[in-house]
Length: 197
Image (cartoon, rainbow, N blue to C red):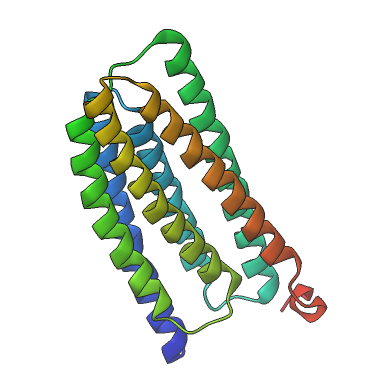
């Protein structure tokens, strides 16, 4: 394995571990705080961890495998987005009582972790579509954390649940857009990338 591939594998391994730990923490917080936005963030980071695992598998393999891995990542992100949207709709119908302070605290912690992941990934120099996908996931997470932070403040200030539901839907839409971006990026790779190697 060359130095570039070794660096990619090492970085993705670290980012994978951070996302697994963050997903578990956000899941516990989302359940305890009855928050659609935190639950969405937890599922987002869990799906990210799976995608980073797929990206690790693709390192050093033929371009066709990298393209297939990217398509799997895009499909997973789309499923996640639709699932989060469905959860927000369920909470809208059945009711929820999100806890603003928990939302804000966890969003701040998650933002720091996701910013660190984004920094680590951007240090890598590669046109690998899976690394591009990994960057897209980390950037989406960081943007989502900002939304959860704002929603938590609004929940506390207004004593209303709609900011939490709104951000849950926004996270879903960001995920769906990211899925489409990753799919297009993988699909428009040069024709000679499509040859099995």
